[in-house]
Image (spheres, one colour):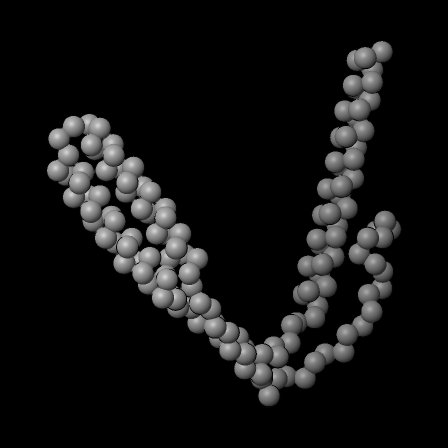
Length: 135
């Protein structure tokens, strides 16, 4: 009885997976065909500018200083434990200040509207929904 119920459960899972992949593959194909038929209309151009904030600049300086100091400590270490300590200090400095450099960015977006954009194509309603079962 136990083996039969496990085999039945495995069969149901396999059938469900086959149906899922069949429907998803068909939906992906229909979406690709729909996207190929209607070219996108450009309506604007977005200009993104990224710069470091004051905190990001401080973190960048501290990142360089901490790596330089930990390298100097590593080269001057007399024992293995001092080398390990310098290596851990380098890893911690890179993680801490590198994360600060990565996060403390200011992004500015400028959006320019296209005035002489090509005319839009008429959009027709789809003949059948994407999730229909009929092929």
